[in-house]
Image 1: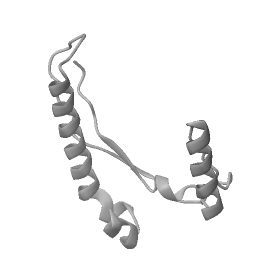
Image 2 (image 1 turned 45 degrees about the horizontal axis):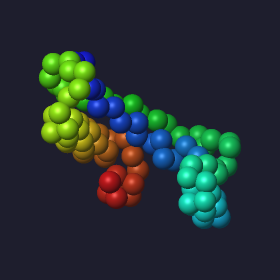
Image 3 (image 1 turned 180 degrees about the vertical axis):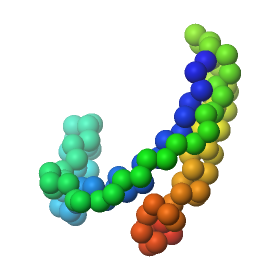
Length: 102
């Protein structure tokens, strides 16, 4: 199969400003309709985004019906690679208080 490349975009969470009423309304809509409708200020903040990518994660050979255990193993490897990517770049790409929160 095709290797998965972990990618993390630092600063993405600061692009749009959210408000408490918007989060509460979104939660109510999700609960009643079953879909998420994000309510944010439609004008993006001026922030710098940093896109970083890590080493490809090998998924093994292509299989039409992979075993659940194989999918879980690859997913676990991907999450570890994504976490390592964040840890490697967070202090250079995020404000200190945001980087410390993880």
